[in-house]
Amino acid sequence: MKVEKKKRKRAAQEEEEEEEDGELGDLYFRGIAAYFVETGIQPRRLQIWKQKLLQLGGVVEDHWSEHLSHVFAASVETVTDKCGRRKLKKSKTNVLKYTWIEDCLKAGKCLPIDSYVLDILPENRSVSRNSTENSGLRDNAPEKAVSSSLQKLTSSERATTSDWMQIINEGGEMGVVSKGLHKKETEGVCVNCEGGLHNTQGASSEEDCDMKNEAEASSAELAPARDAAPGPVDSLKNEPEAGYTPPNLNAHITGPFSEIKDIYKEALGDDRRAFSYYKALSVLEKVPFKITSVNQIKGFPTIGKSLMESIHEILSTGRFSKLEHLKNDNKVRVLALFGSVWGIGPATAQRLYDKGLRTLEELKTDNTLTPPQRIGLMFHNDIITKIPRHEIKEMEAIVQKSGSELCPGISIMCGGSYRRGKALSGDMDFVITHPDGHSHTGFLHELVRKLKSEDFLTEDLRIGIEHSTEGTDHGVDTWFGLCKYPGREMRHRVDFKVYPFDQYPFGLIAWTGNDILNRRLRLLAEAKGYSLDDHGLYPIVTDANGGKVKLSVSVPCKSECEVFEKLGFPWLEPHERNL
DNA sequence: GGGCCGTACTG
DNA sequence: CAGTACG
DNA sequence: GCCC
Image 1 (cartoon, chains in turn cyan, blue, orange, red):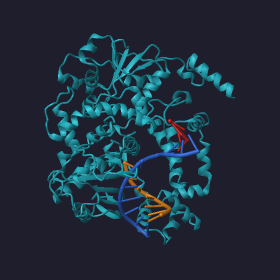
Image 2: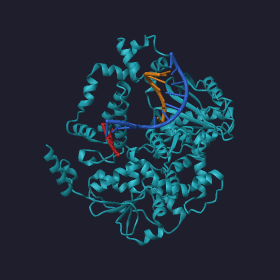
Image 3: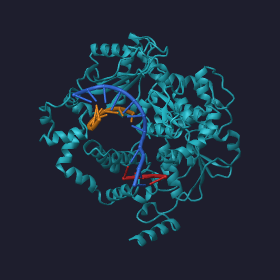
Image 4: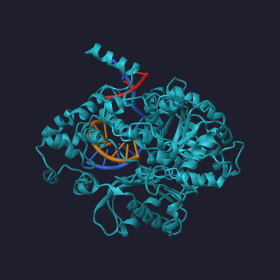
């Protein structure tokens, strides 16, 4: 068995990559030496492309040089910014859109490059705009987002291939990576942030900072709900109109994985195992081709031995015995059902099961349920129903309108998966602040009252602290509850959190997520001697007794960009945060 | 073998 | 306090 | 579950 495996492995390396996946017979990327301009691309997808390029005979370089055969980029803008217009024109390198790789992978062969070539035109600003438009990347990276992320990224010029690999992978090595990054960045402090902060617009010493970008960044981060006029506001903040989510070509794997993840988490309380599936499926759903053999995903991050075996089983038999086994267990089925109710977790599900309860109908008769659980149960079906993007947009406008009527200048924006560009969201997360630094106090109570009177908010689930006039606490008001889309009885989950202005960037990052990114940022912060949470970045110091103490004063940051910068983490546009 | 985010409400 | 939730 |  072992020998057999070894033999096969050697064969796979020396020979071609044939074996079980006969359809991808040869190394069709052989002879390609490529450099990737990473700007404006989801890190996960990027990594997958690199992996496949290597696997199929190509070479990936960390830096651009003239001997390369190919350069891949999202648009003309990004590539010229990174490599230089003149140098590119001079070299014979093929400058191609990323879509070429995707299409090759889908087709299983090397396609003609003709329709993928990015034309490097002489320095005309308006030209690059058109080429972005035509790049075919609009579906997942509208030009606006691309260009703005470009500027921000290039200013903090790190992210080599290996950096990305490590960032994308688990947090273990993050300390090492970040040290390297940190050096560069703490010295050269993020240009974009600097400008934004002090309002010193003019492009500073760095060549890649421009004013348009500053304006965009600030309007994107602070979305003042204008005086009762919701219309034009929309276009200013939560950019993604259509959503960036690329199609998932591997639902045959992610579907079962998602199911088993929910069971481990909500029924069995095995969070860590659940998290492993969760991370794996976020990788698998970004693979740009339909997986037909485990050989195609050899060496992918977050997919270890056990998951590989599961995937192999799914591919070869169409079944997932581990999941089937769990679903055939009646008790597990009941626990999973109970656990899917808001407010009921694994422990409560188990307790209710032990009482002999088996259905949601029976659950309704139980008198030990807390009021929030009761509401969760009553609207169980509504709550698990996803909300389409355009409806969220309308509801955001409703909240903004009422908010600014109550308090002119208030900034209200919908974060969460909506801000990350998802086409469907499970709930809405409103992050609120006021630029004057004090008008946010007491705002939430009023807002909730008003929105209830408008028959938008319906039930309370959880009510957070009131702002304290003593300033010892963090003073973040929160409200969790349910709402109705106008003209419809169905309930949706809504969260509000109101931050003092100086904590807003931290709150916005935290409530935009995703959770994988949050955890990674917090891990990184810890490795650098900080503690990061939704209201600040706090230095950890050693006191006289050698104990670790978290300082109560945060490192000040005036924008999300600046938080990333302080941590030495590559900037990600909201739609790039679907890690 | 041990790590795996940090916080805040509810009862 | 444990349990649950949020990203 | 994965990854040092």
